[in-house]
Image 1 (tube, rainbow, N blue to C red):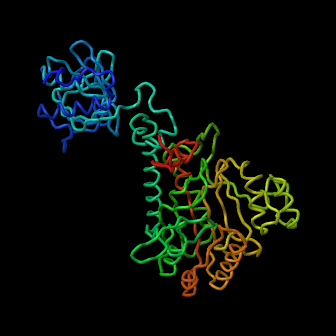
Image 2: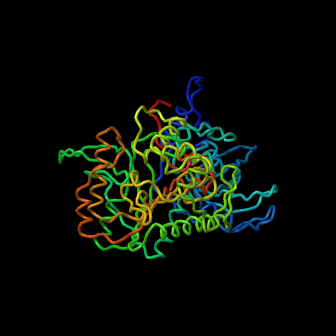
Length: 499
């Protein structure tokens, strides 16, 4: 088959995709299947780069290798062809001449396009310019690409398009692949650390008849056969606590949760949450576990405790700073947590609260914190002891009954972790959920709902316990220096528009 056999008819209106479709037809007509079934690789490209790193300029190896990947560049030079092949482990140059391949195979290679996936067999050598190269002896087309890749020197820069077509983003931008490789390492290392501490990984339902465990609006769905409305989980908490009742003492789950809320640089409707529960522990134990885990992740990935995130140096050397919510409000908002409801309402209004009627006290405090405090918290810091009204699943503070034993870990103005000494008194838990139901009836649609079965589980007896939730996506953002949660999710949620 010659190069001319692959050339489409001369039609100025033909598109690149149509040209490639015609090539598929020409290949099949010539007896070449453009969509292969398998290829027996001997090496990943990254392995080749490492193994033959010491080859000197114009030095040739006699090893015959078989590699496969996507053509990401191809250029002709007289009777020779240069190009680059990409797989998940790396990128390598290939080289072929008409003399080594013969006219037919050379024409076949010449007719391939950037984006095609091929297997090649050949020997590695170092070019005059010092680039490690595979000299092609044989070539196999494995997948014909019908849609052209972005222009090679500019890649895929449009962020909106990158999020919608992540598969192209991953081809065009090596740094993006590295982010997701790091994400996988982070989750693997978290699991390893918890397994070393005798925590058992469990799985709980995504679909629930009652949603709970957080202040959030759910997504709803319907089971046709059972004629039953269901909710996608907004938290992992309540099923995991039931397992504490059942006798498991150290458990964790890493899973997707779904919250019907807005989108921002740190929010996506679907995200990855890890929750950890330890019987006979409290929020102080969870604090120590959290700082050990986060600081260890930083050190394992970067070899040190100090990193730079979005231009700001961060120090993860344990222990992290502890600061009560009361002291934080006084320091950054100039208001006391013991101020009157009226004073809190006036402060919140001055900060932009749009309400003619004051929300409950805890919500006012949370609003002031969100507007006037969190933006000042850059270095890792535990904010401790929250109003009991806004934490219906947490145990009251031992020496101050208006507060609960709860902390949030804040890093670079962003909540990364949330933990409680878990409430295990079924009578108080029921009363708290009744209060949440009343708040819901008065218009707070993110209030917790009543879960009678959870209260029943507590009546059988749940041991004292510490519980911890960590937003995996936000941890990955920090560890990979990504400004938006969309940059650490393979497929972030996007508005449904035509692109």
